[in-house]
Every structure is written in C-alpha cells, then in structure tokens.
Length: 113
Length: 111
Image (cartoon, helix red, strand yellow):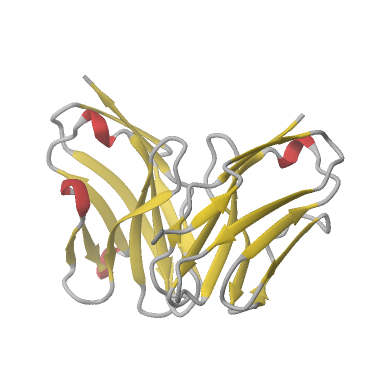
C-alpha cells in the first residue's frame, strides 16, 4: 500500500507484559515519528527518527519505552512492563523531510488490563 | 522554537452554518502551517498546508485557511458545515524542525 501501515491495529495485554508496536512508513520518507494519544486528548510526541538515528527522544515518558528503526524503513516501539496508564492509541507518521507534512497511520489501540 | 495555540477545545455549529476554528502560532523563522483532521478511530489526515505561497490556502472537503502574519494566525474556515465534518481538528507549525501540533479542537455539527 501507499500509506503508513501500523500493526497490530488493536492490542490487549495484561499489566506487566511487554508489547511491541510496528510502523511501516511510506517508501522514501526519511523522517518517522511516534505519538501517543490518550482518549479524548491531543497528540503527545514520543520520538522522532531521521533515517535510523533519533535526534529527539525527549518525549519518551519513561525508560520502559524504547524505539528503534532499521535504515529508512520499519520502526518498532517497545513498551516494557506495561502499566494501565500506557493504555492509549499509538500513532506513527512519516514525512519526506522533517519540515514537510506528516502522513499518519491509523494507529495501534493499546489496552492494558 | 515553534508553538501553536488552538482557541476552544470544542466548537459546536449547526448544519449549514459557518465553521471557524482558530489557530495562532509562534515561530522564530518563517513558518510552514498545516491543518489536519482526525475522524474517530483513524489517524490524522492532512486538510491543507501553507508553505509561503498564496496566503489563502484551499484544502479538501471545502475547507480553507488564511495565513495572517500580522496576527500570527492561521484560522480554518468552511462556509457551510456538513454533518460529516464532525471530527477533531489539529493545527500544526514547522520552521526547520518537525511539526509541532496544537491540542486540537473537536467540531460538533448539530442537525
């Protein structure tokens, strides 16, 4: 497909488990972004990749959160020892360049029981 | 550094009425400005963008926005609201950095 793809679309897990969320950006987009969106809230910036390096990790809420990216391709966001407050929609976006429009996936809805 | 303020977390209009969603920005460099729309259970979709060409920008679904440098504003308008316009709207700004998003405005359309 031509758009940003995220998987899984929904994830339900027990408190304390680790989860891994995946994002496939649009081909050719060098910049990739992760956001968190709690119910009824705006976007909370988590991390930004330029290629496979992360110039800005300032939004990661704790050391339980980490992300990596392979080249200018797939990125994974990992949350270890999940807590109930981690329940949210995690959105991924990519762009051709950091100051250009971001194209969003439909998100992964994470529910922690 | 850039920042965005969206005035009003919730706006309600009648079907057929004018839609006006307000956005003010702050930027230390000439900005690029964007409006996104988010429908329930979906990601954000680009409505329109300003990139230093015409100050009046037309987007999808009949929306438009006007860049006013003197007022540091980029308000989103639509002459006649449709029920299908009910969604969350986000304003964003960038200079030479990644986009910075506002907190969003939820638009409700009343029949």
